[in-house]
Amino acid sequence: MTGTPPTRELAHLPGPALASALSSGSIVVLPIGAIEHHGPHLPLSTDWLMADLVSTDVVAAAVEAGLDVWRLPAIAYGKSDEHFWAPGTMWVSWETLMREVVELGDAVAATPARTLVIYNGHGGNLALLQVALREIRKRTGLRTFLMGVSIKAAVDEPGGLDERGFGIHGGHEETSLVAYLRPDLVDLSKADRWVPDHLADLELVRFNGGPVQFGWLSNDFDDAGVIGDARFASAEHGAVVHERAVAHGVAALGEIARFRHRPDGPAPIEAALLDDAGGAR
Ligand SMILES: [Zn+2]
Image (cartoon, rainbow, N blue to C red; front, top):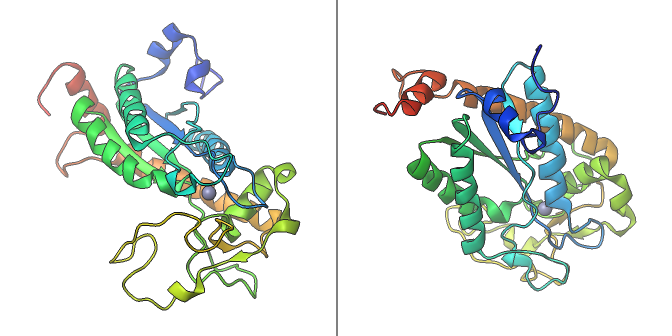
């Protein structure tokens, strides 16, 4: 990798160096988190920490695997209106966040890179980012992708863990990951089980992804504002979650690098060169 700048932090490059370091085949990763209430056991910065630290490791591992990936500084403030009631939640309106993300898309389009990947650490940002993805593509022609910090529960769960599919905020996986990333900021002695059991038997009206969705604020279910079972969380399990999240991120970036919208379309790099020359898409 002679001649390649040692950093993959895009903002640490001098401006003129960026123009020659990035090419139309480069992938730019924009992490985004949140500063929001996560209960008594986790810091407000939980979602930002995950987006920032895990994306750093994903980008490093992807570069190691031969991909041309660059990372932007993580956006700390997200759409956290479901936690607006909790002091310390620092959030911006959906209009503000939408403008920021879409306008950052314009800024990425002004670099040689033609692929933008948003790396999200907060579920509350999701719907907005899905809309931004298409808006940025329409405005700039960038290839746009959205992925999350992958902390899906797997088979190695401890006995007694009982989230009933509701480990979505401050639960087992998230608490474990932050306990691994920043053990100094996590107080596992305050971890508890906060699960809305009365919703678990509903078939159609479900949390995220069910056929019938419902509007909710994080203090609708109880006063804790946490949804999950954090009692068995540990830094050891967090190390496993982290390893999985990095492997998932690298695999996802690999597919993104190969992705083309049409089966017979040009490879991404050729397509970007056509775009640069003002050619038809
Ligand atoms: Zn969270």
